[in-house]
Every structure is written in C-alpha cells, then in structure tokens.
Amino acid sequence: MDNQKTSQLTTGARPGWLWQAGSADRDWPDDADHENGNYQNKCLGCGEYFIGHKRRCFCRKCSDASKARWESLTPEQRAEEQRKADAELTAWLSSQNIGNEPRR
Ligand SMILES: [Zn+2]
Image (tube, rainbow, N blue to C red; front, side, top):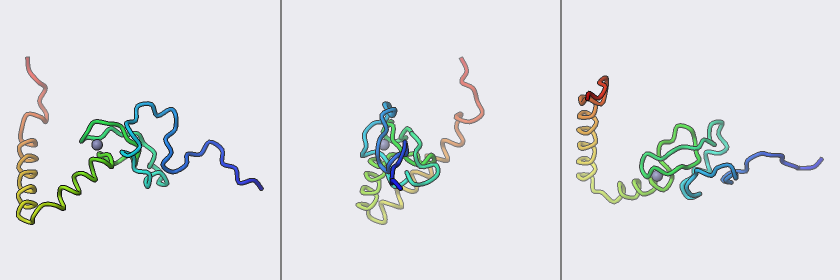
C-alpha cells in the first residue's frame, strides 16, 4: 500500500489559490487539523488575511503582540485597560451604531 496523499492540505501549508492571504506568520497552523480550521479570515487588528479556524478574529501576529503587551502590564494597568474596554463597549452599545440608518 502506498502512503500517497492526494490533494490533502498539509498542516501549515499555504495553497496556491490563497492569493489574498497576507503572510504565513499570520496563520494558525495548529487550527488546520480541526474541522473548520482552514478558513481564510480577515484580521480585525491589522486587516490582513490569514488562515485559521473560522471563529478566529485576529491573526497570530496581532494575537502574539497583544499577549506580549498584556503580559508587560502591571495588575493596576490591566485593571485600567479592562475599565477602558468596558467603557468603550458600553459607549458603542448605547451609540447610534445599532438600529439606526445613517441619515442624510
Ligand atoms: Zn492581524
């Protein structure tokens, strides 16, 4: 028996049709083995395309950067960041972003 793989994607490989994708260091190769792990997503952080699980919103680069930044913060700074994020979310939810068409 030949151990021949047909057109299967190998983990971490970037197929040629993926012309839109940014760079491989943005991908999540560990996701490739999951059922929905080979989706092409657009990162909310940098706007570049990457390959990963379909529920991922950020590429690996942005995720690593924010993780490193978070780890460098003191507990007080982290609490402050959390407060800011909560305030932003509250402001966004109560703003005209929801339910209103822009008027002219
Ligand atoms: Zn990104």
